[in-house]
Amino acid sequence: MTSGLRQWVHQVVLVLKEKSVKNSKLVAFVLDILTSGKRRLEERKKKHKKPRTEEDDDFPGREQIKFGDVVEAPPKLIAVPKAFKKIQDASQERLRLQAVDAYRKRKGWASRPGVQLPPPVTTSPFF
Image (cartoon, rainbow, N blue to C red; front, side, top):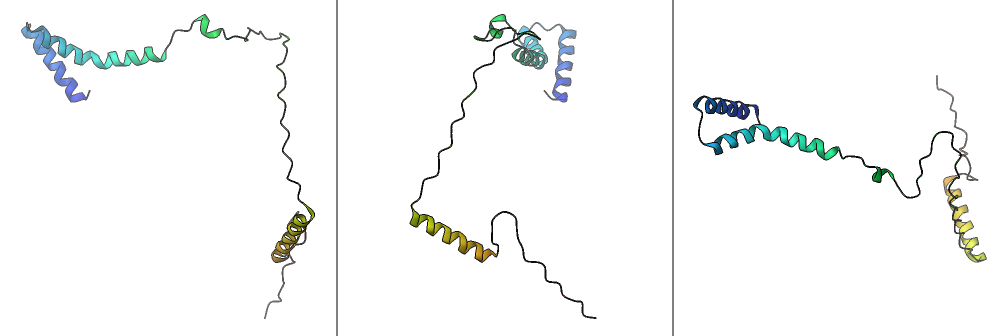
């Protein structure tokens, strides 16, 4: 509710109290407007604060373990082995090696690990 509307509602409540209005519906409506924000806030607080029960804490297979207790560890997960590369026949392997050699010649380096650039060309300054 905006501050202007809130002030208007308070003024209406004061007038209603002074004149002791008999229309209870109007009084109830005005009071409802005044308390709706508080009620909504309380409902939101209640919504987030759920009462904790012992049933929530009691998960199957979960025991209360205190500091210093010796416990048994769960079984280790087994790592699934990687699938091996498809074995190529000799002709395909030869084609692959030729393609790798051609690529390396184009790029200008002989082996993969590390970058082996040619030494920088030094030019003497012209004075």
